[in-house]
Length: 330
Image (cartoon, rainbow, N blue to C red; front, side, top):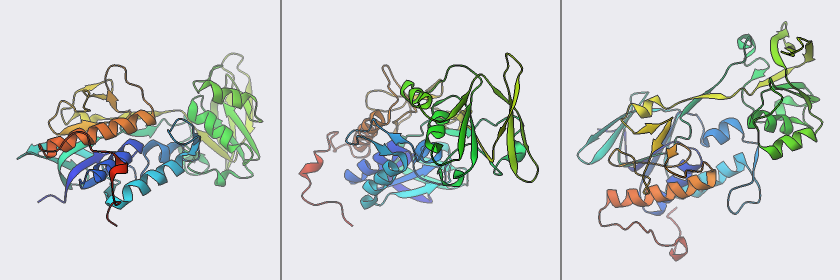
C-alpha cells in the first residue's frame, strides 16, 4: 500500500510546481507536491522572498513571497497535498503507475509525475573561516530584512543575490558594505547600476580574511589581493552570498536523461521515462529560456499532456478557464 495515492505527483514546490498543481486540479486530477525544502516556493522562498520580480505576466512588479502566496492560494481550492521536507529519491513503475520513494521511507503512487525541481537540492557555498559564526551573525540567505535593522552589515559576493540583498538592506541596516573579489559583478546590469547609485559601500577587489569577535560578531577583515592592503570592516551581521552547489543526483538515479544537470524533454514536456514529465528551470531542450514565466507555460503543457496519459480518452486541450460555469468545489 502506498502512503500517498494521487493522479499527479509534482516534484518541486517552486513557482512552476505550484502552478502545475493548480492546473492539475483545474483538469480534475488529484495532486501531491513533494519538496525537500520545509516551505513552498522553492528558490524564491529560500533565497529572495523580499525581492521584486518584474517579468511575471500581469504583474508590473510583485514581491517574491507575494507571488508564492498567490500561487498557493490559486491551487488551494483543489486541495493539493503538500509533502514538504521530503526528498523524492527513488523511482519505479508497476501496472501503469509510478512509485516514488522518499528519503524518509514513504511511498507515493501516482499515475503521472511532473518534475519541477528547479536546480535540484541546493546548498550554499560556505564562507572560508566562517563556520563558527553560522547562525551567530553569519547567514547565507536573507528571508527577511527586519533582523538587520540598525546593524552594520557586510554582504560578500558579486552575483544577483548579493547585489539584491545589499540594495534591500539599504535603509534598514545602519550601514551596508558589499565586498566582491572581482572588479566586475555577475548581477543584472540594471541592479548593478542601482547599486552604484545607492549608499552601499562597494569594495572591489577584496577577499574575506577572517571573521572576528568574542561572544558576538564584531567585524570582518578583508584584503585586496593586488595590493595586499587589509581593512577591518565593522559588522554585527555578515551575509555570504557566494552561490550554491546544486545536486540532482537522486533524479539522475531514476534513469532520467540528464544533460549538464538538466532533464531533457520533448515538446510535450515528456522525459525519457514513461509517465514522467518535467517543467521549469530543470528542463532542457533547444531554445530553452529559464524564466518563471516560461516555467508556467511548461507546467501547463506538462499537465495537459499527462492528462492524456492518465486517461487516453482525454484531450490535450483543457478548454478555457472562462468556460467554467462554477469554480472548483470548496
